[in-house]
Length: 116
Length: 440
Image 1: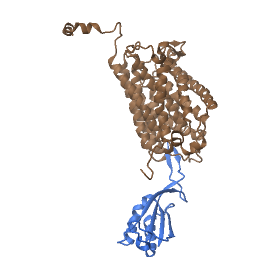
Image 2: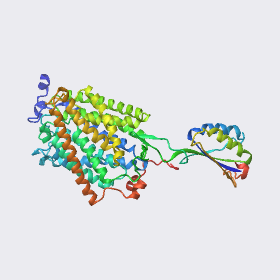
Image 3: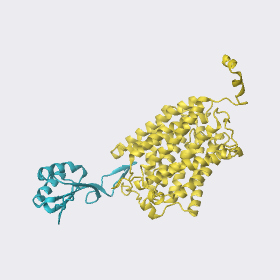
Image 4: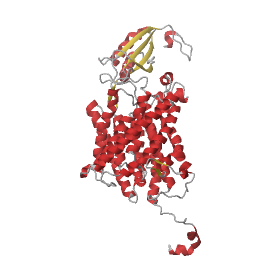
């Protein structure tokens, strides 16, 4: 099991969801948590104009997706996120893949891969 | 009527109070309405300003406007009206014992020559006294100590606003007698508030997070909710009809209705021209037509037309509106060059716009003036306007410097660095503007 954390452009959420829906198991559909986040990387913030003065925010808004997947789905899910989120410009974001020790479904108490 | 007198002779014979001057019912009704309209500009200003600050300071910014309604609302009744509109002492200050706390004012008393009840006039003028110090708050937003702010606005209204209102608006005031025109408060309200705001901003210093622009890129303090600012600008525009067209009753009798119509038309026209001008300037200059730019232009136009609202014609109001946005657009950019933090452009819009309007009144005045404006080849009124504006600038800056320096020495002007970092809403008022966190 892996935990996939992806930081993407807010406007790319819908394409990413469409791609994920194609590759993740139908019964499993897909379980996705989305959080609005702010940060900075190589991309410079979008200039805003405040009473005629250019202002560049220090933090840029992004969305963070968190998805837990079984090993067979790691590569397809990562590929789907990249397909959906890539524009080719600076600021497309990153995908992190982390080991995942255990998963517990609160309602039933199921553990491990079955609970994902 | 004759039949009625025959039917109810006793009723009609008994009541008309002795030697009561005739009441101008239209003027009185409009002045009552206008007083309420000017009051709604204060919440309008609160929204206008609060949208431009960060969300941790939304309440404290609105509070600066709202508390003025209460503090100056009382100051005006206790002493403010007396100092401004009481019997003149040498043209410099008003005083009448009966006006202290209004304790000796007969509720049926009329204002001489205006046809309106004195209490209506007191209330109308009081609304101007409320909004003027609240305008200054924009220059010191997000960092001024609340207690010091209250002390400041009481002292400032008493020592700066009231004398200026007396000089310019009291028929025995020395600037009024000179012939300086200020229809609804270009000098008394906007120049005084704007230039005082500059002094206060310089004395209190920049916000801790304010980084003046380097290479065209400015500070990173962003407005938290411009929808509030737009609604505020709309309320200001709405209320400004009371401010300007209401002043027709205060200034001009017996042609109040005509002047009110003129002031109404010029107010609308100048605001529209100025809003559009600012929008176009930004669109050309920065590439995007911003809502804050439109709102700023509207307010700049309203400020600039204020002193001449009942003196100039609508076509002049178009020119005044266009120039207001051009000049104020440059004005608000000045602060980045100069490095001071006039946070919400109280000086850039009200100081500069008010000064421009006061001078342009001398150029375009044709109505309710004894001297022709520059458009008719007369220089005298323009010279008088320069005197009036110059006196307003110098007096308000000097007096504000003294008042603010005294407050700074005695109780300080700023919140602590930690309070500023946390935000004044929680640090000073113990509240959040928005509880939209994880749990509702």
